[in-house]
Image (cartoon, rainbow, N blue to C red; front, side, top):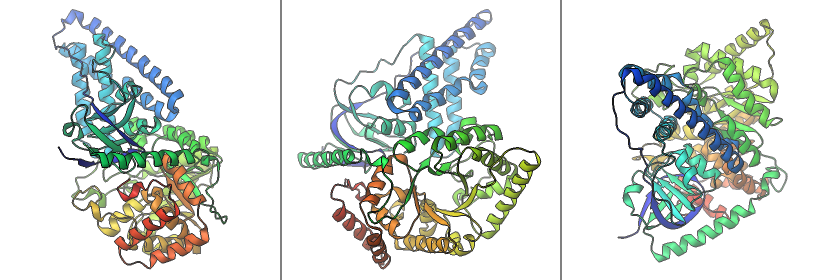
Length: 588
């Protein structure tokens, strides 16, 4: 059969060439039977012992990974253990035994599947991971009930490319020491636990490939390119030779970044750029620090809903924000208020059925309608800000009316806390995300009302170009490096600097090496990227002159089409950075 290329989501960088090992999940075999009423208390005791063993195993995994990958990844198993304390989960299992009389294995399987189905009914990638976590926990409890220590899958016989429909966190941990060269899965996204574990264990990974597990055979040779998201099936000799050279070049490049985290993000002629990290979970703050980030430029607070499975109260929010702020101090943390709606729908916030939820009731619109939720979050942020420099920014700002309503709520919060004699930091800086064309047009007005701007290039690109990047039919039209987007960035920067406020970029464009020199030349003050991209972006900043970047950006702004602009950027970057793995050109 001929060579075939599959494209998925690049989730852990690196290039690997090897033979396929197809991993099939070992669902424990058990039979369902009726437990006599007098034996049901003993059956519940048996369940409780299995839950106790499961909790111990998860804690052991957490401890094992903490030394290997740091607390960020180890916290995945801490998050899984939360299910064991969830009365909605364990309580329902016990009820199935005590009232319906089914055996413990069947009860665990039934309730686990019910919870998975409930989560599957909620749209959005962020609900995929809890589905996997509850499945992982349920299988572990069943194995402990059966006395099965681990699955009976065939072990890897040598260095292999691990291919599966999906991988649970425990699968990764169990198999990763068996010489896994790379990971390729049908399901998953860039923020899945599989992706996080692969990145932390330095294993190249591509997820979201849809049918890779059904497209390959055991032992076939494949190439996994975690830089570009490509998986090449049955590569010929020429392709293998080509990618072998790329892999060597990439490994040499990574070696060159080994000490850069200790150095400032400063151009050769002294222009300092604040380089910060985007954060999904509090535990990731340590990764941002270790990769040389100067604080957090985007703290996505929506995870708090997943952590509690309900509207998070003030005390819980204070605890979580404080963990991050105190960890990265004296560098600042920018907390984005809840960006709900769109693909982030949670049971405690009833959402209407909308034909186009991404352009509907979402983000700040939800917060302004749910003022109690907004006030609670603001109180928590202002109180947690006592532990270090803190900023708060509001997403999906449409115009001046919204920011003025926000200011009213901030005044209410400060008045409340003062009246209650509750300590808080009144000097939290207030900013907005520029991610709608209307906000760009009104940037000169908005700049007079806030302390900083942060450009969310993901949504700005989608709304400016009328492209849903999740729609395969039009995905090719999603081009952040586009003449219109550059002019919008330029307009926003000019308006912000006129009022002496900083302008940041926190969208994916900030982590694209093809755009780094361009953004420096457009006078962006701060770039906020995922932690793994920090060294690469810093290397580019430290290798260029600000004066040259200004000239470069001016020339780019004169180009008329996206094709001309992309070619201009790629040609310049290839010329300047011969050692850079040009993963953004789709052929690295």
